Image (tube, rainbow, N blue to C red; front, side, top):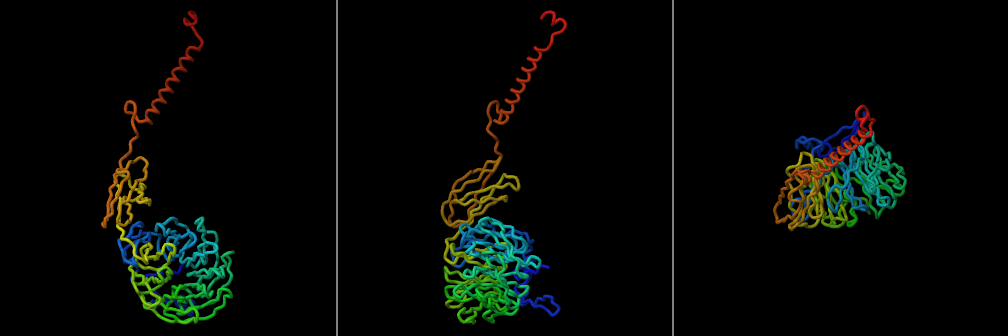
Length: 484
C-alpha cells in the first residue's frame, strides 16, 4: 500500500499516529477540499500557464515565470555543479531538469514510482532521490552528466527528506515509516549507519559549521540533532506541531523549522540547540529554504498557496508571494539568484526573483494552415520554442527582437521571420503556413516528375533497341532465308 504524502493528500496537514494494533490513523489538523476536485482537472492535466510565459511584474519578491513540469511535483533541489534545478514529479515517476539560465525544462529523467525529495552531493556531483512507497524503499542515485540512474540504495520504509553532509561525505535520509535516519556513503553508495530518532521523521538539514544533522520528527513535534561523524543523537529539541521542512541559514547561523500544524517557523540556535524565536507564517508551512544572496528565507505555505519571505534579523515576514495551488517545496538557485517553488496542485514550478526585474509581456505566435499535431518552432531573441499546439508564447521586456520560423517539411510559413516590438502590451504574430509545391520546369513538370519521365523514356528506348537487336539476330526461315 502506498502512503500518499502530506504534499499529495487532500488536506493541508495531519499528524500520523500508530495505534496499538499497528494501523496508521490520520488526525487532520486542518481539512480542506481536494485540489483536484476543486479545479475539476484530471491528474494528467497541463499547467494552467504555458511553460514559456513570463508574467508582467516589476516588483521585488514576485513570481517572474511559471514552468510546466510533471504531475504532482513534490521535491526540489539545486545542483550547483551543473547549475540545474531538479524537480521530483511524484505521480509521473520522473524528474524534470530545469535550466536556471533559460528557466525551461531541458531534460526529463525516468526515476521509478513516487519520487518525493532530492539532495545534491557536491563531491560526487550526484543527485539523490527518495521514493515514498512501501514496496520501493530506496534512494535512486542520478548522474547529471548522463541523466541516468546509476545506483539504487535500499533504506528504511517510506524515505522522505534528504540532506548532504559534505564533511562526512554522506547523504542522510529520513525513514518516515520506521522512525530512523539512514546515512549513505556517497563514495560507495552503501548504507553507513541507521540511527533511531523521533516519531515519523520528515525533513533533514545539515549545519556545516557544526557538522550536525537536524531531523524534523513530524509525529513527536521535535527535532533530533545528530553528529554527522559519530552518528550519535546529541539532543532533542521541542518545536511546533507537525514539523516538516527544515534548513540551515548559514548567514544568521540558525536552523529554521516549518511547523505544518501550528503555522509557524521555529528558529533554533545550533550553538545551544534551543529555540530562540517563533515566526508566524502562512497556512500549513511545509518547506523552507534560505537564500544567502538576499539573506532571506522562503517558506512554502501549502494551505493558502503562498510563500512567506522572512527577514531573519528582524525575525518577521517581510513579504508574502502568491503562487499556484498547493506549494510544497522550495529551493534557491545561487548562481541565478532565483527561488523555485513546486506547485503540487498545478503541475508547475513558480520562479520568484528576490530582486527587481523589468516587466515582461507575452509575445504569442499563432499558426494556421498546419495539420493538427504538426510540430513547428519559432526562434525569438535567440531562444527556440517548439510545439504541436497552434500557439507558442514567449515573455520579453520592452524592446525590439528578431524572430525566425523553423522549417516544416512540405509547408512554407509567411512571414518566415522579422521583428517584434514590445511596448508594454501583449504582442500577437500570425504565421500562415501554406503547402509548399516543388519548383516546376519543362512543360510545367516538377523536377521530380521530369526525372521520373526521363527515366521512363530512357528505359523504353533501351527496351526497343534491345528488341530490334535480337529481332535481327534471330534465325531466318522461309522466304526470308531465300533472299538473305
